[in-house]
Amino acid sequence: MNQFTAFIKKEFYHIFRDVRTMMMLLAMPVVQLIIFGFAITTEINNTPFVVFDQSQSISSRKIVEELNGSAFFNLKATLRSFDEIEDHFRKGESKLAIVIPSGFSDDLYRTGEAQLQILADASDPNEASTVTAYAQQIIMQYQQSLITQKLNGNPVPYIIRTEVKMLYNPQLKSAYNFVPGIMGLVLMLICAMMTSISIVKEKEQGTMEILLVSPIKPVFIVLAKAVPYLMIAIVDVLMILLLSNTVLHVPIVGNPLLVLFLSILFTLSALSLGMLISSVTNTQQAAMLISGAGLMLPTLLLSGLVFPVENMPWILRIISNIIPAKWFIIAIKDVMIKGLGIGSILGPLSILLGMTVILLIASIKRFKNRL
Image 1: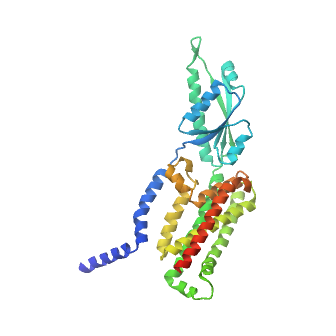
Image 2 (image 1 turned 180 degrees about the vertical axis):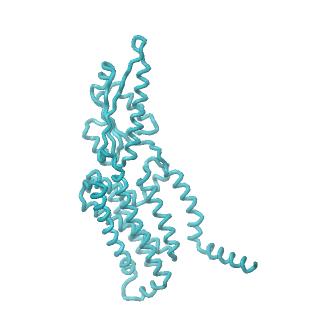
Image 3 (image 1 turned 180 degrees about the horizontal axis):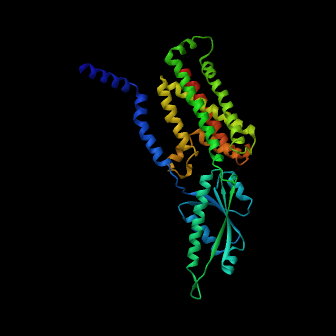
């Protein structure tokens, strides 16, 4: 029994002496609980919308106030022309647009029936369906409030019809949304996880020291291990694009070369993350744990792939800004689905480029110090 107790103490000692592993074991459940608890939500709140009100009547302003006063919508701008709507959609400044014709109020009170138009950015079909349903419900409630008004003692049967138009994805195909996200997940899996495990494996087997005594500089050794994963990632991107276009019928509206450039840039950031993880871990198990729980889960939950980031608590929205996959998915969707050029994605492109440079420099310097 004493020997059994001694073995238990020994195992506890091996666990406790590795501070990084202990932090992962104790902190990771807390982090995952917070992320899962607040990030996984199907609620849509504070959706930015714009209005092109040609009527400028009491009724049209009341509809806008009802929408803006709800927890679901947040008015971003009042437009002067119809053409401004697509500019706001392309820049990602709005998810919904309300177009009220000039004769809206006259039609409503003269004939008892009027019509307005709802336009939604359907590059994320689930979110587009939800926000249009919310908008229609609020307009319906306003319509019901009008019906309670009476003329000559009888209720007036006012009717407000809504014409819904989905931009970029009129058929609401879910593939339009998940194909760019799948690209991000696949690249993160191959580049970050596999690179970190590959380099740590050399450490565990003791072959890294043999490589270091060769005439090649340590930095080139590490980069040489990363290049094959870069090439494999490019092949995977080409296969995903080909299959998504031919099998899932997801169009590549923008420049395919720009799509490839963004994919390579994100791949380099993922490779840098993999090298950085391998520099702070000594076992494949630890590298896999950090790569899987520390990278894959945030990429899945906080990048906007599954759940809209704008609906999350402010702290998670801030954390999402340091996740490269978020900016990659924004840029790749704008190019693939919306057909934007490089000038329209300079924001996410610059952030992704800056992250890649910083991660690459940090990983190389870390390896120089560690190896």
